[in-house]
Image 1 (cartoon, rainbow, N blue to C red):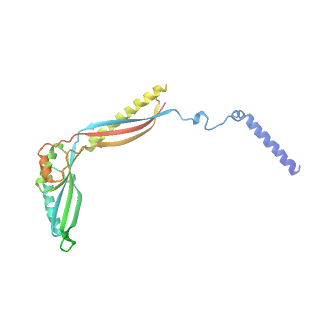
Image 2: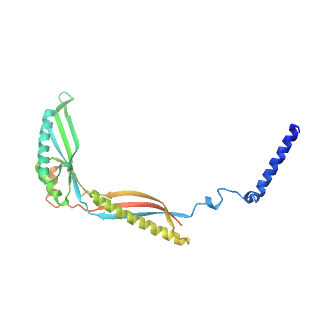
Image 3: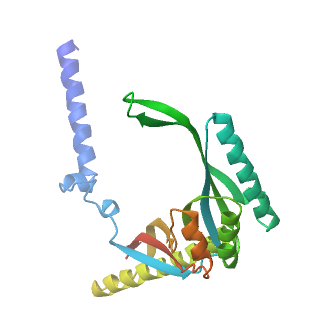
Length: 253
């Protein structure tokens, strides 16, 4: 058998094999497509909804921000005077029960003061300004007003204000309660959609949780300690905090 005859024989065998495969494959023989259009590739029906939960809680701690400002002809003098006042304030706070870890420096600056000299028409240095800012945590709201007076009486001369927060344990409990409300709200919405479509919710496919934490009130803000002393005479009202959580949930029918 020459080469041409052998090639023709192999070609005939290949054609016969392909024909046999087609005959034994119903999907191919009937012209059906296999892939994206089969039932296994079709996504199950689902619905995506959102839910929100809000829990209102009472603040449990207060944060008071204050500062000491001093001026002196020398940098050392400004620092020394400032340090003496701050030692007096922190000593009084600790004696009143404020823990050392609840007293934190939040700002510290020492810089020259410049004034305009009209005679020579230029800036000249006029000593140094020292600012030391501190934030303290008061873990009993009822003590906030008394603590403000204590700070002022011992030499603080600037203030940023008072803010109120919830402690970590209270905040975590509130977040979980808000999350429970958010998930319940999402499920109610999904049930309404499923019922309208003649379906029943089978399971949860995905959940995305968005923590919006809380909105703290700021009931008092003053720029000087004199005004703060006047405010401290009245009870400090902490208000309330709104803890909110939102969710995005996809349910399968």
